[in-house]
Structures are given as structure tokens and as C-alpha cells.
Image (cartoon, rainbow, N blue to C red; front, side):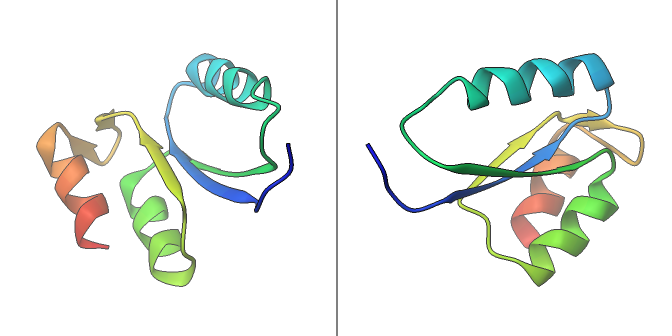
Length: 77
């Protein structure tokens, strides 16, 4: 099945977790998925202000944010 490209932003500071997420999502062969990966909330907010993403996957504990502050920061962008 072909469809539009799904633009995905991943906010994850653990390199091993990032690899696992990317592999799991790439194994979904239904759509063309483009990844942008960042390790800090500030980087994610910058990207969200510049581009529109269809999906955001986030670790809630990253170097510059914790818990609901991370979620609220992403949502505000």
C-alpha cells in the first residue's frame, strides 16, 4: 500500500532506544516514513516551529526537560 509520507519526529536521548524505535517503525511497510530525531526538548521545539509533523514520539525524560513539562513543551510548539 502506498500513501503519503508520514513525517515523524522522535525525541529520545538514549541511543539504543532510538535505534529500537526506528527499527520498529521502519518494519511497518504500509507507508513511507521520514524520521527526524533529536535528543533535547529545545531541538524538538525548534523543528516543530519550522516543520509540520504527522507523528511525534517522545521520551518524557530528556536532558533539558522532565515529565509533563516535556509534553507541555511539545504541545506548545
